[in-house]
Image 1 (cartoon, rainbow, N blue to C red):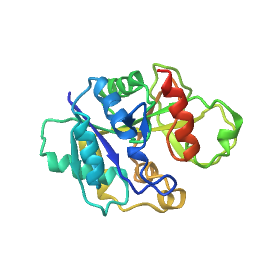
Image 2 (cartoon, rainbow, N blue to C red; image 1 turned 60 degrees about the vertical axis):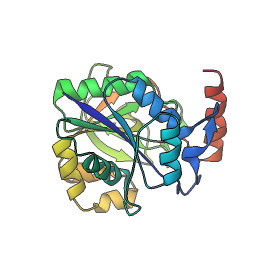
Image 3 (cartoon, rainbow, N blue to C red; image 1 turned 180 degrees about the horizontal axis):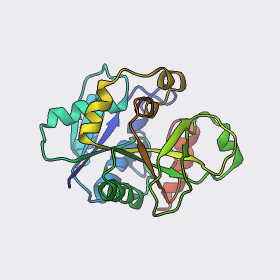
Length: 242
C-alpha cells in the first residue's frame, strides 16, 4: 500500500502572517516540516500552496511543491487539488501534515501510517496526553474525545472534537495530522461544510457529521504549532538545541 504526504501551506495566516517562511536555525518553518515528513520514509512528499514564495522556498531547499488555487476554504480542499494535479492513480492513502508544526515527531508520522494500513481505516489522526489543566479551556488547543480507553497499540474512534471542554479521562490534545483513504478523501471534500464545522471552526467535524469514522492513534508528544509570535519564540528555543 502506498502513501502520499501533502503539506498545505499559505502565507495569509491571520494571527501570524508569513509564518511558513519564518526561519528556525536558518531554515524556513515549511521546509523544516517538509524535511521531517521526508525523513519518515513512508512515501513521496509535496507542499500544496497558493503562494509563489512558499513554492520557491521549498524547491530551493530540495523539496517538491505545487501551486494551487487561492479560493480554498480548507487545507483539505487544497491537498485534494494538489493530488488531482499530480495525476497519480496508485496511491492508497493521502497524509495531510500541518505546515506549522516543525517539531512533529517522525515516529508519530510512521505510527499513524502503519495503523491506517493495518486497520484499513477511512480517516486517522493523532492525539497526545494533556499536560496541564489550562489546555482544557484554551480555544487554540483542539481536543478530541475518544470512544474507548487508549494505549499505544489501540486505534479507537473519535466521538467528538472541541475547542473548550471539562477534564475527562477520554479527552486528549488533538494533533493536526490526518491520513485519508483516497476514496474517503474524495467523499469528504464533496460534502458541504457542516453547521457544526463552521460553528466550531473544525473541519474534521464534517466527517463525523456525515458518518465517516475517524480513528485516533496515541502520539508520543504534543508538537508545538506555530500560531503566534510567542509560539515562534518558544519553538526557536527548543529547536536550537536539537
